[in-house]
Length: 393
Image 1 (cartoon, helix red, strand yellow):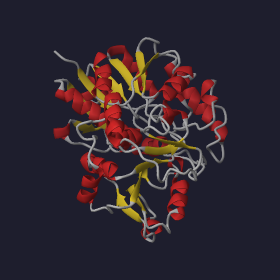
Image 2 (image 1 turned 30 degrees about the horizontal axis):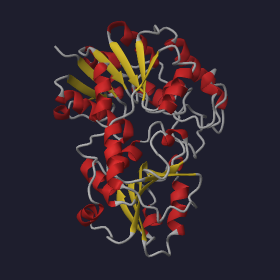
Image 3 (image 1 turned 60 degrees about the horizontal axis):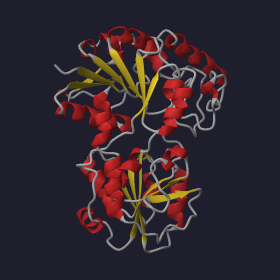
């Protein structure tokens, strides 16, 4: 009889959830009993269940532990900073109790590290990293800070009381020190993440495995650019630049640079930008004639069509744990213009399947690529073989 697997992922949206859902569906196709546990979303038919933290803990503790402590202010240019929970009740959930394998994903604000100590006593536990939060005092991307190597002491991402991060780091360390080194397997999706996690104070003692994320190559696959443009009613003769981000204004994703790029091409009749993601600044984009604002897309097939219709995906992020949109784009045959950072160098061969840039002034407008070959190579690299590696575990 095959193992029962529970995937735990706090959110029911974003890149971490997209990958969790794909892995879950692939396991179901292989005959496994697989379920997903999230904070807010439930769909029995899809095998997704909700663990209500409000129902399982007092509302007072929910407010105290989930939201930033009073007086602790995150610098607005950074993404979320997550204070670790001291306690949680995930192990009491029936789906978790009935499982043989617990697969942790993005678990901030849902699972306390204290529960991991209990989990490993009776279950096989895997943890796929989707950002750096599991081994930092609270940030999700540390940028150039390496305090996670010897204990976070004063977080540069907090505008005040940065020294409090030492308390949060201590909470994690005291608990993880109780977990036997052979009881927890850490999975990194990139060489960059593997190196960071395996050298971190909190996680270095555990077993570390490198398994790149995979994508559904039945969806993200080559399609003729002209065909995709006709389906989406996009300009057939212009250069189309695609920008994809869960939140368009995310500064880590290079929002200021994409605006600069749009403005720089505003007077060119042969350039057009398609932006996919949530935004609170509709007017900022709608006032520009060379921009189509699509909004959030949950339909993978529709997203694949936009990749195929574009000449380039523009990924100007300077902090990535893997780069899922980059890989999806490559599988569709669309080259990627991206920041020259270590994670992107794992995916991009400069001039072959994309362009690594230091700034957006690089001249890439007229460069051409073998799109079919890009798709062929990417589908081989990020396809079913990476799922097989999870099956081995």
